[in-house]
Image 1 (cartoon, helix red, strand yellow):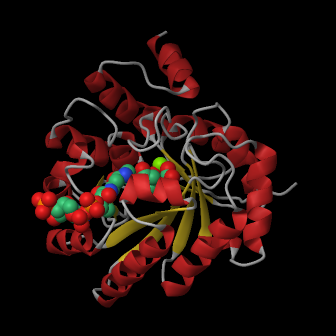
Image 2: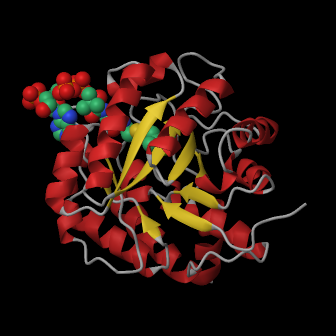
Length: 302
Ligand code: HMG
Ligand code: MG
């Protein structure tokens, strides 16, 4: 069994975590959360989305949020974009990295982006071309890689085809989304084995939602296949508005606790991360959805 000595954590809480919140989270709260996460040592903090505000109202303040962040030189602040319009807004705001997304089933693609998989490939190709021409880095996401809320089982060949297209076109990394958290360790391992025949594992990331409590086990499993980039959400915030019943990403606190316990470096300061989780949980008026955060905060309180 071999594990990477170091894992890069991509914090997606301010975007994936908050996009599904029913009540408006003011821009200043988002800005403060993003700054706390960056100060906690997270190297990437996905900070919002330039998507249609009619589709995801919570992300409507993203341009204001991005421009107000006190940005650190050692941290990336990618913004999610679904199309050229989103990219235009990103470029106007001075964004240096964008993330785009496609789905591995036709139904989820329609529900989430109002287009087929083939159309989504055309869309992201255009976004990648323009972004790279403007000197902006691009990360890709593929949703529903271990199961779809509408179609059930997914084809790993389709996941592989989309990942290849994203990487060939110029994404530096593709993040594999278990959007509804249904996957288990055997399936997650099989997915990486299938993908590794076509794409370099070093360019893949794990983006596992924790709906069924399997995310940590799945991360542990795919790390053994060489995955060394893990997406997570502080306090386990979140869910996708177009995946009913899906809960948040795996909690960053849980991932950091596991990795540090295994002697794997992340660069994250657990104390500061706990403060960020406490801050947003207090604002939302609920406890963090993280076993590690709950236990550590209880211990701190004595
Ligand atoms: P559409 O309705 O087909 O778009 O939606 P359209 O091009 O016909 O435009 C309709 C209206 O939206 C127009 O405004 C456009 O200007 C506007 P109107 O003329 O009606 O006033 N519009 C925009 N406004 C702001 N920013 C934009 C933009 N584009 C169009 N970028 C569209 C197509 C893709 C826009 C829509 O489906 C959409 O925004 N979808 C995003 C849904 C979303 O954000 N989902 C959650 C994020 S993905 C996720 O969570 C999964 C992930 O975490 C990985 C995983 O877990 O699997 C990444
Ligand atoms: Mg997600």
